[in-house]
Image (cartoon, rainbow, N blue to C red; front, side):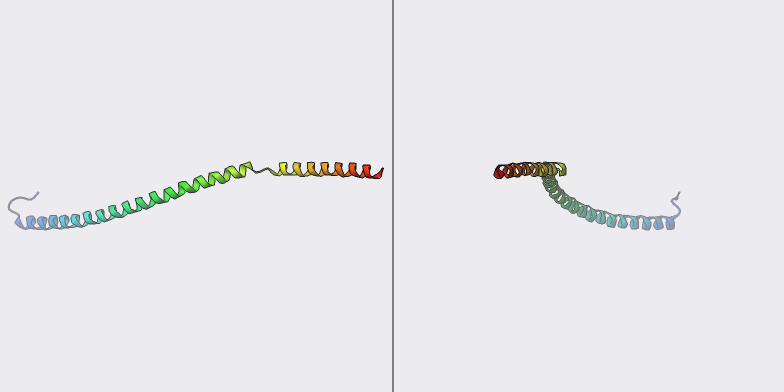
Length: 99
């Protein structure tokens, strides 16, 4: 503790307090500029999020289109059934033409 009879210590403490106050002023201005930059980044991220929502909707539409496409097994079944029916018609036609 400082007593009233120690003026040189009081002046040293006052200088330190003044320096701390000056430093705090600088810290406050730096924090304000950081806050402004963060607000700008937040606005930019909100815009980007809006674009991602649009992309997600488009991807969902593509997924629905792909889900409606026939599978490999369906395609093979259609091909073999078509070949079978075509072969049956061809054999029938050849038998009719022979007579």
